[in-house]
Image 1 (spheres, rainbow, N blue to C red):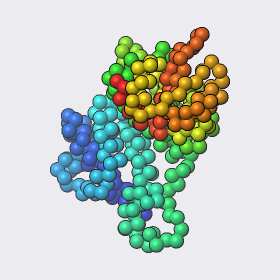
Image 2 (image 1 turned 180 degrees about the horizontal axis):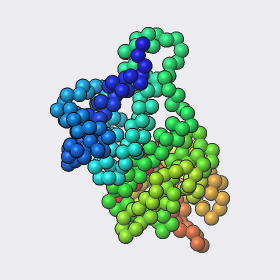
Image 3 (image 1 turned 60 degrees about the horizontal axis):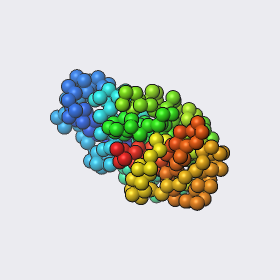
Length: 299
């Protein structure tokens, strides 16, 4: 009898630690610094460095593992990501890979062939629990924010009222189901400043637009507001986005619904302002990383 947790302990964690230790060394950290960051001994780091720890190639070559290791190595080396945050993001990835049919589930079924013959849907962990769903949203949002923070020139796209990158849970119904940055993202002396870690229920304005778009049938789960500029709209159109104008002076939900009724495929919503209302563009997408990549492409 072998549990999936044993696969995690015996194969996943040694592989990820080895990859992460190597990536941190490549970024200039000493063996002692790597040990401190990863919370392991220097002798363990030495074993990773000399290939004395067995690495599972299927795990090491998984694109999601590779991407997360690169992101965490960049953040840990720069001091932008705390070890506890790295631990949470690795935990989230583990839960994703444990779901039926994914990598850790496959390794588990190969280790225990009887599981593959089980007549019912087999799932060791429930990936749909509220806690794990919320943590996945926050983790994705943090990755999107890092993309924006590292995008030179993003500050120039922030409107006077500030920007916010938001993301919602799959069954979002209200603002409390949408995560964003408390206090919004502001341009401080030419640098985009994220004042705090994302939380649920802290963004009213951008969250309202996102929720209104979803209720109107848009297949989106994230969004951001940037300054309005006809040149930016033209560039977004050239990149394949459909744009639609709405009137923010009216009821937002109704106005967004009207805009999407006219342009059902719109992923860029904008309003040109009015008395006391700053013109704003909203870029929507399937997840925070995709939205952030779209914004980065405009710079």
